[in-house]
Length: 281
Image (cartoon, rainbow, N blue to C red; front, side, top):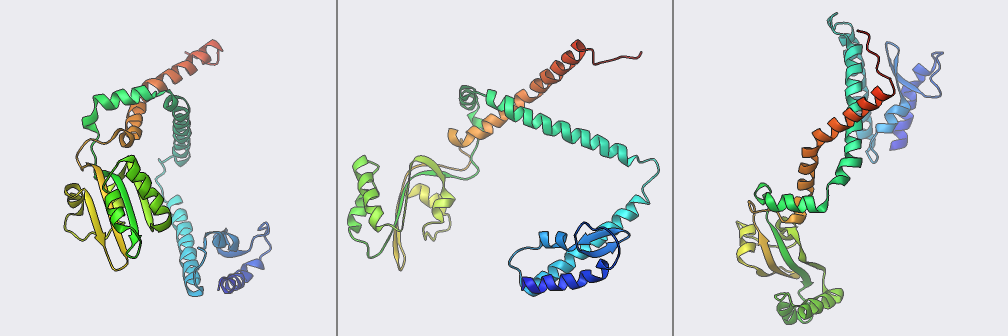
């Protein structure tokens, strides 16, 4: 189907090909007041896998949008107020964009690496009330096994315990029998992610998980076992590992102004010492 579109586009471009103009090997499809849309440009944005009809529809819409943009630009260029200095505006924007990009790169290279782990830990410890969870988190273990799996009574005993021997038994069992096994006693995970793995049909599933820390469910094919060792609800303080990136960003932003003032002052002093600044007043 893509080949048919290529043939169609090639036919569309034949008329433009007759014009004696250097298109640098490209095939022009559409011309508007000396502006050309080439087949190669269209093909570069054409999504892969479209049907013939969808490909043609996409091409039609893209060409129409391209033409309208050219026409709107020309209309705007001929009708902007005389007192608007577009070149000056473009140059100012270009300078601002270059300076912003440089500052961001400089901050990423220098300032971000200057934030120590101790600073992050201290700030978090002193300002825990600033970092609240939007969604609850849990720690625990989850295992999903077929209804026909052996030793289900042992699984019921193992999944309820966070002792090392029970965990090892459950892990060994999961290698041969589990469809899914997730160990997260040592890290916080989203309750939503866990709920996506079990067929829990209740009105307030997150509250249910908090109140029923050991959950066993089954459907027509599988048994689901979830043990929740710890729960942190929405509105409670974020665990350090979740708050850390946010804390670091806050510390970077706090130091950003002073850092950039030092950078600009250093550049100024260097320019003065090298006599690069000439005052004519």
